[in-house]
Length: 84
Image (tube, rainbow, N blue to C red):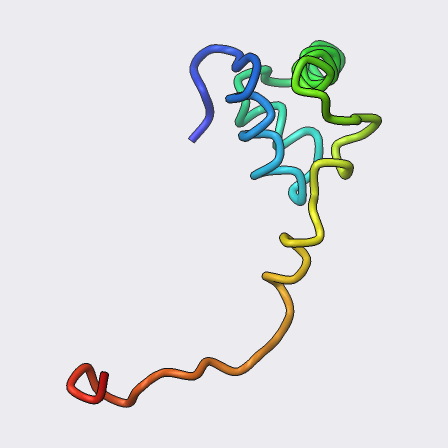
């Protein structure tokens, strides 16, 4: 759900990071900036600098942990809740 007002600071960085894989246009929309990509990127860059995070482009916010979560693997779990 898109924010009704433009996000700032940590909330902006969190929202942008969560939506970075979908592209700048989608991230800007969901963070409350609509189609104003220039302002979105300026505010995001400032928020990252304030936090000490290096930011050049949206893909900088995608971490190695995000990539690992998308890897295929096998789920190991009991067959029934009683086998815990």
